[in-house]
Amino acid sequence: IKKVMPIPKAHYGGRHTVTLLPGAGIGPELMAIVKEVFSYAGVPVDFEDIDIDPNADNNDDLNYAITSIRRNGVALKGNIETRSREVEVLSRNVALRNELDLYVNVLHCVSYPGVNSRQKDIDIVIVRQNTEGEYAMLEHESVDGVVESMKIITRSNSERLARYAFEYAKRNGRKKVTTVHKANIMKLSDGLFLETSKQVAKEYPDITHSDMIIDNTCMQLVSNPHQFDVILTTNLYGSIVSNVVCGLLGGAGLLSGKNFGDHYTVFEPGTRNTGAKIAGKNIANPIAMLNAAVDMLRHLGHRHHATIIQNAINKTINAGVHTRDLGGSATSREVVDSIMKHIKIAVN
Ligand code: ADP
Ligand code: MG
Image (cartoon, rainbow, N blue to C red):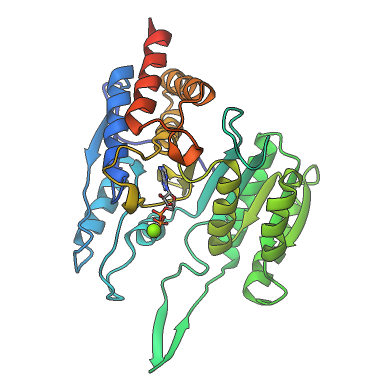
């Protein structure tokens, strides 16, 4: 088995340099918060900021960002906007993941006891294919009024993704992996994804493997989410399922997601929203981006700082300092001030 955890690269004199892609909407204000919290907690990480012009009609900015991530090995990102409708101007978010071969997206969805959510005590891990499927970006209008969009499923990507899911389950004491698909309709593509996961499952006799159709999965997630442990799924279904689970736990502002390949790692909020309507109003929930930043610190081996910030986040949430999306009335600033107060208590 190939080692999945990539090795961070840019590491000079005890400090790490990581690529920072603020993106659009609430991205820049959330990144400013991450920088403020990092500097307050004395985190030895430097950022290489890269702005991508949403109106650009070429891929130069995107290529520069990719070069930077190749150099640093690690990035923290907000959702990047692509305004151009030209097919040759790629969706930056998708192109970045595809170019860097970040083939797996992992979302660990755990309930916060202090959040008044629709479902309690959820602990589900979503392992999502991150580079192909419906996101292959192969669309064309064959004749006027007829568009073809190709969904690509490969055995090699399905296999390494399934292996990632089962290895994750094994390493983290998980009992069950459920492959989520639509192989009853998409017999060849989802059929291959499902068959491959069944093959890989045979190598892990201690882990129960089952499968479920995407439609039923959405219904089951809403009505009886506690039956799920690890979910293994394709790109588009993974996007939908992640949003359903995040919604059950408290929405877009809480959870973080990780994008892994064999060489590079990109951290971002779990549901990848732009939040254009709430930008610049001091109301966005900063927790999802801060959780992504904490994930990044763990990945870089800065465990001490990760724990301090994580504890400060948890204390803030459990004390009921909640932004509007969680039913509270706190501003982004008040949440950050509370987190910094707890950091101060911890380091003194
Ligand atoms: P997308 O970028 O996928 O179109 P949106 O930006 O429309 O998604 O976000 C979906 C919903 O989640 C919106 O109602 C948005 O206000 C909300 N949302 C996203 N991120 C946050 C956040 N950090 N804090 C509070 N609400 C958020
Ligand atoms: Mg939107």
